[in-house]
Length: 465
Image (cartoon, rainbow, N blue to C red; front, side):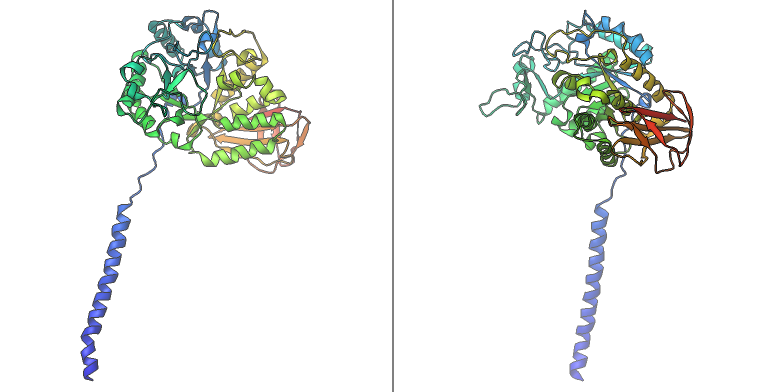
C-alpha cells in the first residue's frame, strides 16, 4: 500500500511529462510547418502582341547586295505581306578584327556593345528601320552575345578582370568550344554583369527595340537573365528568346526557347531513323515537361543549321513541306530564316559575303498561306492564347501524326503523312468529329467516326472549323 501510494506522484509526473512531450512535439511540428510557406507560381507575362506572332531571322549581311539596314528596309512590305510579325536581327555590332575568321568575320565576335557595325549603316539607320517596322505593325529584337566578346573589344584593356582566364592566366575562348575568334566573360564579376545589363537597356531606350534573342543563353547564370528581364520590362514590355532548351528559363526571364529536338526529330524522319511515332513521342515529352505558357520556337532552318549542316532541302528531304506545316500548326511560334521563302538550297557563308538570290518560290507561298491561318484561327495562337495540342490516335501511327487544337469557337485538325507511301487512315477519338474545310483544297468535309482519309506520301491535310 505504501509502495503504491509512493508511486502515484511518479505516475502523475510521468503522465504530465508525457503530455508536455506530446505538446512540445506538436509545437515543433507546427513551427516546422510554418517555416515552409510556398509562394504561388507566377508565370511570365508575354507581351500582348505576341499572341499570334511569327518570327523571321534577318541576316543583314547576306540579305541584299548592299548588306545594310536601309537596303533591308525595302523588304519590309514583302515580309509584312507574307505574315511576319517579329524581326530578329542577327548581331548588329562592330565585329572584332583580331583572330577574325574569314574576310568579314563572325557576327558573334562583338567588338563594341554600344555601337553599330558601320558595314550595316549608322545608329540613325537602325532607328529608322525599327521605326518603319513599328509603323507597319512589326516588332524588332536584337541578337545579343552576352557570353563572350571579340579579342580586341576595348573591355579587354579597361576591364581584363571581367574575363575568365585559362590555367596560364591568359584570355581564353569559351572552354571546350572551338571558338578561336572570341574570349569568355566571367559572370561571377558583379561589375561585368552591371555593364552588360546597362548595355541591354541602352538599345531598348535608344533604338526602341522590342527585346532580344540571347545567344547560348544557358552558358550564363539564370539569375542574370531574371534580373535583366525585370529591368527591361521596367522600360517597356519586351520579348525574350533564349537560344537554349531548358524549362527554368521560362519561369521569369524568357518568353521563348528553341525547339531543337523537334528539328532533330524531323531530320531523323528524313534519315529513316524515326517515323511518325517519333514525332508523337517528341510532343508527348515536350508538352508535359515545359510550363503551359512557355513558347517553343519551331523551325526547319536557322543560321546555325544552314551554315554548318547543309540546306533545309538536304536535312528534311521530301518531308520538308510536311515539316513546315507541322512547325506552323503545332504549339509554338514558327520561324523563317532569311532566304527560306526564296527556296534557299545551299548553306550561306558565315564569315564572308554570300548574297541571297531572291525569287518567288512555293516554300514562300506555303509559309504565307499558313501564316494567314495562324493569324486568323485562334486555335493556333501562341501560349495561353491558343489551343493545347490534343493527340488524335489513328490506325497507322507509324505513318501518320494527327492532332487537334481548339480555342473558343475555332478548331484545327491536322493529319500529316510522315512516310513515303500513301496512307489510308481512320481515327480513334472524338475531338476531330465535325464539319470542316480542308485548308489547302478548300473542300468541305464532315469527319465522322467512320471517316477514312487518304493522305498522299509526304502529304498533309489541315481541316479548319
